[in-house]
Length: 111
Image (cartoon, rainbow, N blue to C red; front, top):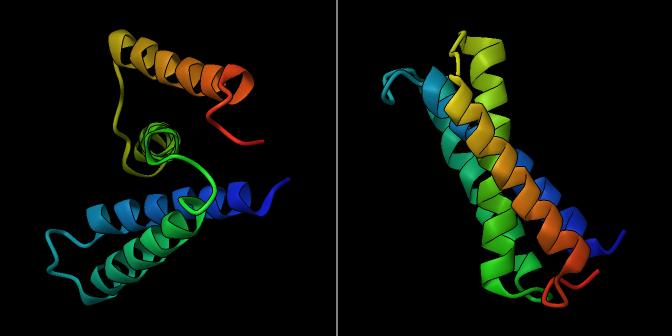
C-alpha cells in the first residue's frame, strides 16, 4: 500500500478519535478529552497534509470526510447509544459507494 494511503487512513483514524473525544469533552468542560481533541485533530491535519503531496485535495477530502462520517456514526452507536434511521443508513451506504467508485475507477486517485 502506498505511503500516502497509510497517511490518509491514519488521518481518518486521528480525526475519528478527535471527534469521539469532542463528544466526551462535554463542550470542553472536561480537560482530558479536550486535550485529546486538540492533539488528535492536529495529528489528523498534519497527516492529511502529507497525503496532499500525492493526491488532489478534492479526492482526499471526499475520502477523509466520507469515511469519517461513517466511522463516527458507528462509534456513536457503539459508545453513545445513538441510533440512525433507515434514510441515514442508506445515505451512509451511498457515501461508501461513492468512495469505492473513486478508489476503483478514478484516475485522479493515485493507487
